[in-house]
Structures are given as structure tokens and as C-alpha cells.
Length: 236
Image (tube, rainbow, N blue to C red; front, side, top):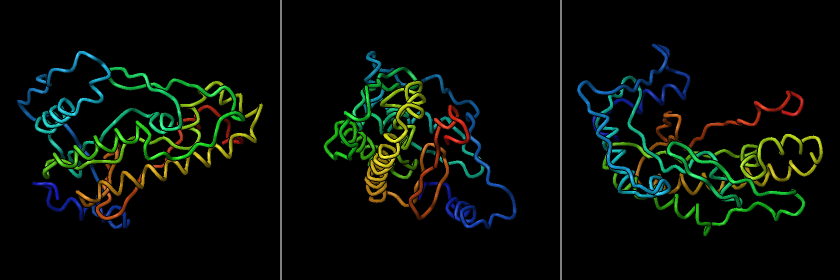
């Protein structure tokens, strides 16, 4: 249970049960009056370290939460984060890190020569994100909830590996190659999600993610496909 957020689970349970008839749920985050949010911790000089250094991440999380007012059904939230191409990285691409986001380094030349996309529990990205999630959980102490990492399965995962322009061409040139890869990417997504959820359940009740939506008892994740913006209704 989050300290000072009594009634939060009940409000979110009503939402999921389609029973919040008094009003829509509201999630409002704003700087606290007088909060000096500019006093952020000193960031590591190495840009990549800003994504991996847990002492820096924890201090940034604590300061951000301390300086934020959470109104309505909003709540303090933290999650380990390597950006939107995490599943693509688990499938073989590398990541380039910027200050606020990361980019996939596309590597697939053709789908026929690529081995099946499978879950590897020893994958360097997976072991790193699980350890970072564990540290956040152990340091939460009722001050924030920990969410599942940013996951983009299906065609979004294939974009990370192939690139958006080339994947659009694949729809025309080699569509039969794509459905098996989509299925493999969804299986990878399920394995990572189950591992993340299983770890989180050891420390807290309830499931959330980057959306800031809470299910107080069951695991859940948002359905999305950014790649859909690039294709026709027929191809969707």
C-alpha cells in the first residue's frame, strides 16, 4: 500500500469494474508549491550511464516524487526504462541512448536468414532490466509503485529490428514472412511481461506501467501499435 493514498485501490477497482458512476477518474500531477524541481541530482557525464546508474535513477525518482503533487487518482510511479525498443533489443538490435529517449539500431537485412525470435533469460538487456526493477522495488518503501517496463510487441518490435520504411516495403514484397515474426515477437512479449509481473508481485500488490493506470489486484498491460499509423486499414 502506498503511504497516504488510502482509497486509491477502491477507486481503481471501481474503474475496472465499470462502476465509477459518480465521476470519471482523474489523474493530475503538478509541481508542489515552492518545490525546487530544478535541483535535480547531478547527472553522470556519460550519457549512457544516465540510463543505467541506479544511484542516480533512485535519487532522481525520489526528488521528482517529493516535488510533485498527485491529485485525483494519480500516484507516484517508477519503472526501469531503456526506451520503446526494448523487445527489439532482446531480439538482437542494439540501442543508442539520448538524453530523453533511445533508438534502435536496425540490423535485419532479410527475414529468411534471421533465426527465430525467442526469449533468452540470459539476454543482457533482460537481466539488466530485471535487476534495475528489483532495486526500485526494494527501495520503494511505500513511497511509490513500480511499473512494468515500456514494451512494444508485434509490428512495433519488428520496426526496431528492420526499420519503419523497410518494414512498410516488406508488407508488399514479402508479407508471408511477417506473420510468423509477429507471433514470435508476441511470445517474447508475454515471457518478458510475465517475468516482470512475477518479480513485481513479490514486493507489491497491483500492476501498472508508463500509462499511470493501476489495477489493484491483477496484472495488465496497455495494447498499442505505433506502426499502425504508417499503414492502410487493409494492411492493418
